[in-house]
Length: 377
Image (tube, rainbow, N blue to C red; front, side, top):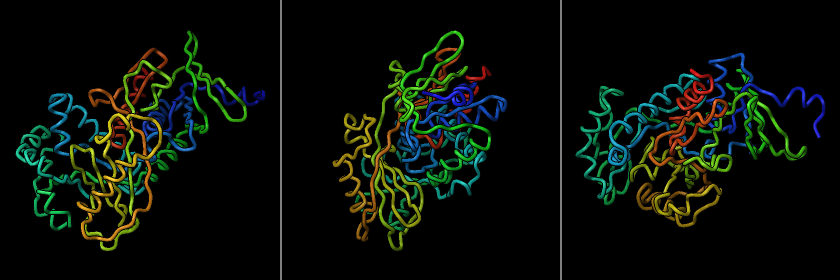
């Protein structure tokens, strides 16, 4: 049972955003920037964001060569370029909004390891660079085979490397803390431990039913609602076309004299690794078990973890001693065409999700567009 004071002061808002991940917080911040007078509440069912926002690898990237070539084949030029532009603009917006120091952004460059099966991609470098002239007139990708030996990768397997100077990495925890801090500075209210179980729309308002540990079910009211729960959206809105995709991640203990730094990819972006100081963080392998990894359960996959450790041992750190420190998983949201989804379902309900593994890059532009849909601009 609620008190009079709780009923009077904590239940009614102009806009409620469901989900306190990077997209949800970015949406709330954009709303307050565009309409400071509006009251905005963010509801999060977990103590921390539930999906991938605090569990990702912290890549500030917009796509490796082989990934872009795959996207061009599947989605065509217009769609591929449109989403790349959103990613590039989103990264710039994020860095401008928070500042590089606050998120520990490191402009270390992006690199792709080219194995035997990916060698044909090298002949497409100039084609892709030409397609990206609108975004980067000076070009993006360069074939740099000498880097394989310099970085100490397994030369018998890694045939070349492609360098992209426009990418980097950041500290995921600092990023989320900075977003939380900025949202609160702008007057956004945030409630964690608030699991939304139902959304009800009528002519006068939206009702958001929340299950709370001590008070039972509570009904919040708002003029409008933004659902930014990404892979978990179907639990609230079953008709949405978004699939969860779990990502497995491991990180080593500090590796003495680590010979490289940067943001690395291979196999169309299905694998990725980076340095965190002198640790190695490695994730991916979802392509080994698509069906099993189409899940919202935060569980380890022993087959994928074993493959990640093999890659560390045989490809990334051959002949070097290292120890595993920990592993975890995060759940991303994927759309059929790899395009983010910003959709107005009704005058009072807007969806913003499906970053397709590029949440760091896309969240700021998605948040801006969701805010515009809510405000009718």
